[in-house]
Length: 326
Length: 263
Image 1: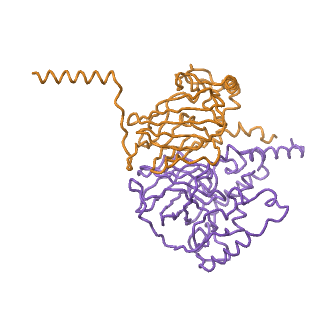
Image 2: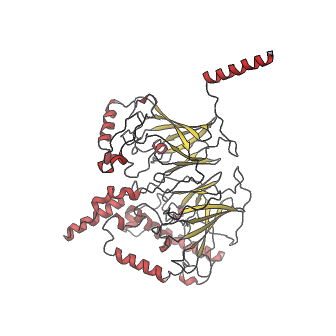
Image 3: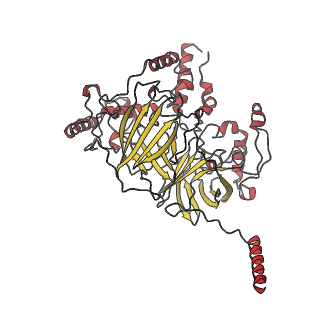
């Protein structure tokens, strides 16, 4: 439960606040590349600890239509309004007021270092949205919801993968900003790029030696990633997902291509394209800048401290007893 | 003739001295920045995860698993085969063993800590860069990033601890502190406290093997430091890679099954 609470707080803050004191100044839509940084064995250097925290929503707010970029002046105005909202105290007696001091534990978005962007949504293009679900995907989602109805608290199997500490929706691929601790570390060895995401401590060790994907029958929650270099850009192709991964309702046919380009010393431009012929009519793409931070990755022992699961289920059983259904 | 005679004597002496003396030290290949190259996918081939001390084969705790659940025998990895428990702590080890089906953190899919992560019966990968070295374990997706710069202080206790590394010749030495008290050394209930201090040494001994040593110090539990050692073997398969072993869902029935709705 605590995870859920923290997440909802973080999401709330996301929505409510453009972080105070963080400048969202210039961002050129075009990809610049930095060629100066190389590893000892000559690979483009993506190493370091990075944050993909952002105030830009994945999907564009309805009222912005096809507007893909803010102007500098609009960003400045957004920022001003956000800092006023952030400065407002929590209403006395609310959960936020009583339970959490968001100035602690890095939960305050104002603590996060944010990459600069003028984008109105992480998803690129005139639509700025995840394409609508195909009819077969809508049916899948509806069937699942109908089957779950009334059984949400029956057992651990009925809870979300994230609550079970199996897979968080930010982990991907594609990797999206987590509500909090949106940090990742990249380490490069000969023939491999390893990406450790703090949420929830999974490592992607990506071979870049040109080997083929795993056989079709070996499927993984996070799929099977293969990388190669195109100039200064790391391109990672991921297949072999499970149907339980369900990235925004995808199936095991999900195919993700990610591109990592070191734009300057302090920025990686991360881009991805997701496609799944059983879910969306066309592929869709997003751009998320990552900014370098001066901090270690902490160990996020999600499962080891998952008191939430026990509490959710024992609470539900207690309810059952009160209703006499047990 | 004299020359030939002399050279054959020389060869005989050389052979003799090699046989009697130490094997010449293996020198590992270098990475692009001149460090010993430990990159690869490695695994211990022993039964230390069942019991780090020498032990005969034994039936497993669940008869339903038959021979597949049996404990494989092993000669142990503890130097001198003795773990110097303080008297009261030896009793706790026995208790742990008796209650292992309830207490062993491995059953719950908890991160294994150091050194147990090294000899879990699943591989781990070393990804070595100039600034730091990542150790990624297949088991539970556990991981640690070893800082190879100036040693830093741990911000908080954790399951996999805080690792500062440095090179001593060809040996990677990792100082591990700040582990919590919730991990074990094996399925036999060998344990430690939150004062555990582990110094690991990874030394290349051939192209495809490393020697692994760990010195274990914990004054709350042991009367003196003690040592384990074992070889680690490289996965030489061309397609070797770490796969997902997200064991949470294998442990959930054990952890939460009693909270399932009854009909």
